Image (cartoon, rainbow over all chains, first blue to last red; front, top):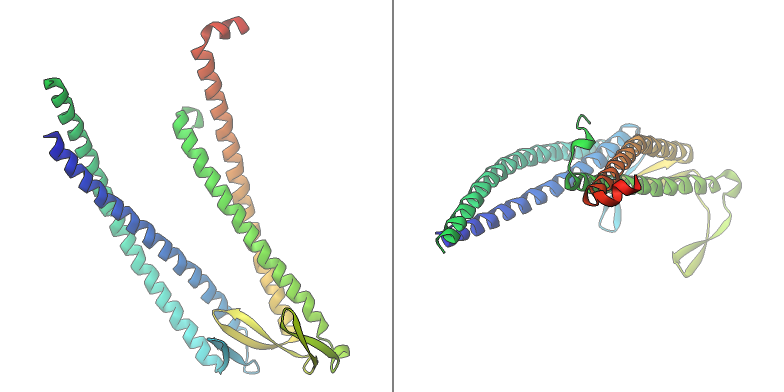
Length: 126
Length: 153
């Protein structure tokens, strides 16, 4: 009896640990997105301060390529949109993961109690 | 915080202290990073002052690598290319560039000023936690050795 529960406990624990790994992975991905969002916002502000006299270059690989100011602005705006969307996506993903890990935690604690009870019974028999 | 520190147990306090330790460390390193970047901008702003009318047409040595230089002449003292982030470079005149650096330096100063109070708060909290921990440990000691405790008292 106790052994079966122990096995189940083990597998549940592994699942829970995997879940935790996913959580921290999503967390760091979200943080990276946040940093990108800040950087792009700063670039957008800078581009908004420019006028047609300023030439904008885009670094592509090792070369600087001349680019239209409006085009650059459009690119950054599009990028901001994308990043915001991604952040939203990760937000829902994280919420989902958190809910799942809460459930898992409950299952784990009940299994642990069961295991302890089973062990106590086994010890009592001996 | 609404929680009374004295009501927490020693392991809980220990956990709280580690957490506060991590937080203060994170904030300190953030401030450090911001200061490094700020120094870079200050240096860039200083070095741009070389670009004035007096130096136009003068000869200079351009570093191709850190150990090899080629002679050149300073042709344009009015325009520079500034990296504004995410791979975008903008050609600006010297005045605008100085403004740009000033903006960046001010921005960083503001960010540092935002973090500083948070860091101080965490520090104060950590001190409080350590104090309560010391108190608890002392209490434990006197409880464990009541004899010596009473004789001392």
